[in-house]
Image 1: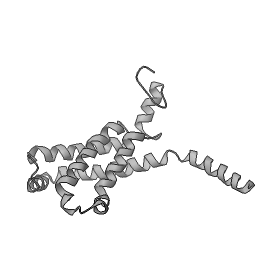
Image 2: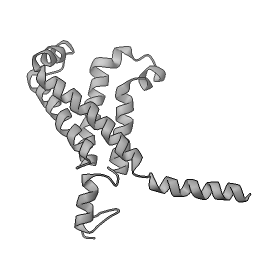
Image 3: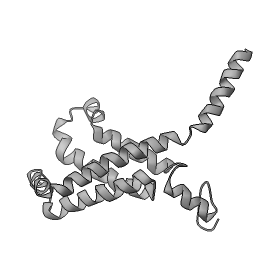
Image 4: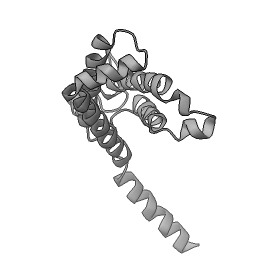
Length: 156
């Protein structure tokens, strides 16, 4: 029994030291994916406009650079952890539209829907919206400078 208690206490100490890791890893992966995607779209905008046109997306000449720019900028913000909750929301929207316009024909049920990488991105982005950027982020640096560490609310 003593050994179980010792192992449990040791795991608890280790867990508290690693609490920063899930948010950091999520931000790095999601940020990187959207930075690469946004940059790729911006550097090949003519092909993206053609693709958006083939999908029947309205005003592809406006939508393509908007989506590309949003992916790039929001991806950078998520990566560095600045305005993470706000930056995640348009990325969720972009993924929902991507599923509906480009991937919906591949969906035959929940299994195929949940198998889409876009769904995984949505889940991770929702997690970031709810949990925030974590302790190793620009959001936390700003919160600390404002004098609020957890649950920073106006007027507190």
